[in-house]
Length: 424
Ligand code: GDP
Ligand code: IMO
Ligand code: MG
Image (cartoon, rainbow, N blue to C red; front, side, top):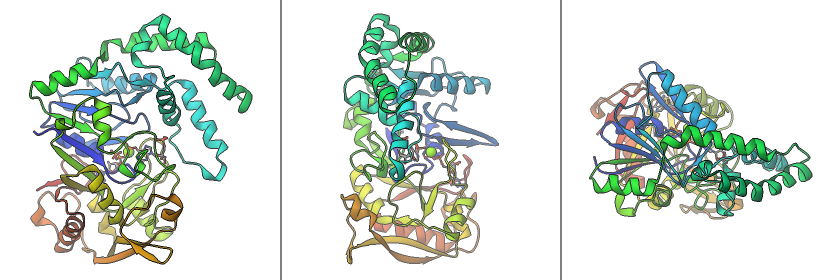
């Protein structure tokens, strides 16, 4: 298989986990390159449901190797927990799972500061997953982060903690009036994570070079979605990493030539969890219908997801940004519930019609969707595996999307299970 990127092109939860699991069959390696435990990637195999936060979704395939790249922020106790859960299911990860020694560590103070900063925002909360993502990436950028490799260098680790902890404690104790952290306890905990994880940690850049030069095929698994990208998304209602294609090169340590095929994964409608503008959001009964039918509750936090119509303006912006070579549409079956389908083909902002993505959040918040209405299929596409078995209205819906985006749809998911899929 050509080296392939699987990227979320909306606000996350597009069904990337399922698609990575599907494509992993034909890949040798599956690599995560950004994000952290904020991700929740669901894979349903027969009646078993797995939710991955850090471990790449290809791990269920025997013999496939997985890497957590340098661009990921790793919460060591959570990673150990995830490994243990798999082990209990009879899936051994030793010798198959690797973690970059350059990856930054999510420390307990990051999680606390994530929660405290959210509280401080009052009504303007981002609605983070409270996994410490923003504070961990902030420390990385401020060059005071702790990296995986520091966990088994006792002297270096102590010096880093001595540098960073007084500042964190000052903030937590003096500004927020909460209990800070004791250096010795954090130090001992971090050393023990280092001992437990050392067998998995490697110089991932040398590893990736070796893998690519050997001709093995790699699947790059994106987390979150393009509209949550730190640079290109709906800032500040975004996550703190590069979720668009560029994140692969810095976050996995590979050149652009390492990616041949770029798949954008989108639901057949739109969801968003957390705060921030969402022009096609459906409040009331229609939104509830999509949420109930699509089981739209967060895989990481269990929060109800906001639901709405497909936003083709946002998707076309992302198709260009990501250089998509193809699209995957998931959850087509959820639209079984709908008689008339709407797709957003333009925004109206302060009386003007546009198909451009505004860079100013205040303007984007005012965007009113201009809809094209398409007929529903009054039947069920659940579990359909052949394009020709789709009702004509469903084909028309997908063809409309293809034409609008100028990107072919090659995979259509018609149910949560591994087998419920059309590959054209
Ligand atoms: P990810 O974060 O992009 O991997 O997506 P999530 O796992 O957070 O959310 C996608 C949800 O939709 C999961 O519960 C999947 O099991 C489910 N799912 C994926 N594809 C389909 C589909 O085609 N139809 C239905 N009904 N559910 C799907
Ligand atoms: P997957 O990989 C959906 C959202 C949060 C919040 C914002 C910032 O499963 O698609 P953060 O904790 O990252 O600082 O939160 O980003 N968010 C996600 N939404 N799917 C995700 O991951 C998300 N990861 C973060 O809800 O709005
Ligand atoms: Mg998810």
